[in-house]
Image (cartoon, rainbow, N blue to C red):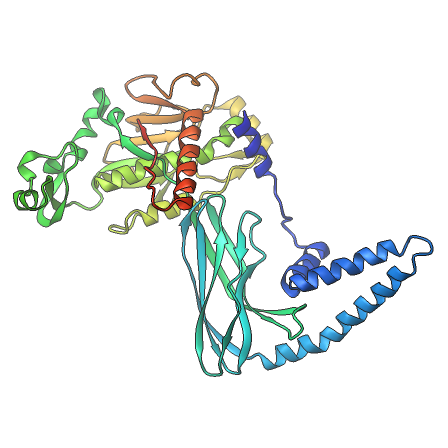
Length: 444
């Protein structure tokens, strides 16, 4: 219940879609004033309200002096802008997982001497918090690398409309935020690590998945390298020299046919508010399952709804995580379709009243076994197995329940507990670097 309440509060938009006068004034306040300037401006506003008290004329005197102080700063800011000439290079952004800190790098070449300069990001999503870089001096003709940090909270593809080189004026109350360009920050979902996945090969439908997890049956003829032994590897592929040298088993790895493997389908269709609150946990679970398949080179194709996502071979799953990061966040307005887009509430009501849930219909019929992940089960002839994230309260006593040989229901509350425990362990490990925290894993 608390998870649903937190999701509902976070789903409320924190900034308007159209920038009005108040938002532009906020931008001036955030970008054009330093902490000293914020304090001086706040004291001026306070003295104006205090001057409304009859007989308290001293407040108006202080307000007038503060106003004259800001007028004197305007020429200083103008001279700072005119004399601060520089060239900005390309903006480099480090994509991270949610709850991690990203970095923005920018190389700045000073044409004139810059006594103090820093880097900052403005006008971003409210969930992102920017920590500006420290002030540094750059001599004329020299180049310096400026780095600012951005603390993330949730998954998504966020636009950074203004990456600015900040130059404070000489008195330190105002500053000039020169626009150096815009950038995009991808925040990947934290994958729920899958330790074991016996459901994938269980039952009659598991027969089509079992050969994909046996390298001896799907390998090619070209030898690629050696990796650590995993459960299910053929004993005839053991690398005896590596085993004798390191004292633990290693397996020979061969090049597999490109595109061959299981087909993972992620359906983020949500029919009500409770299912919408579980979309993020479903994406984290899908990230864990997809990486589990990629590590075993058993993932051939990936779909979000009916749209196929091109996977780049050998990138360590970056293209897979990037596709998950670009799925729009669930909103309490409208409904969510299989590919992540939203439709109006009237359309949803008419669709639910006249038709069954939309089945998976790719452009080309799949040639491999299909594993579907969603918030509810469907009777789809193209799907061999389904893992559904049950957002209801009926599974609070069990972490998972096999509805049939082809459908596995996973408790959303259990996954939330595992995810929060993992975050707690990581935070404690950052506070105590000598202690290592083991990532929480789930068994499906």
